[in-house]
Image (cartoon, rainbow, N blue to C red; front, side, top):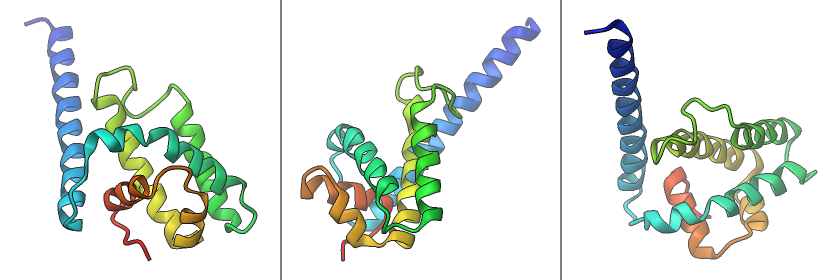
Length: 139
């Protein structure tokens, strides 16, 4: 077997394993919360999450360190360079979902749930779905 084919198969297998791991983390988080999540609805919430991050980054009441981290996350999400390229179907966005979940947990811890609720641009059901995936209880 040619060496390039072995490398290609190894990289492909690694990406599949990483994607399955990321999906398992999201599934486990949803199961741990005990609430059902409509995954199609969650995928439609991506623009709302980006607007939430932008609003939190611009809010002077949010601690400066948190605003810097959220600004960095926005840059990461908008740049074409990713851990897993976004042009790969399904798997390309799994790393973004994990990074966003971690960043939102950080934002909730440092900015507080009232800031998240105040800046959420979507529906209350959408916020509940996002918070379920993030593993945060609405207070």
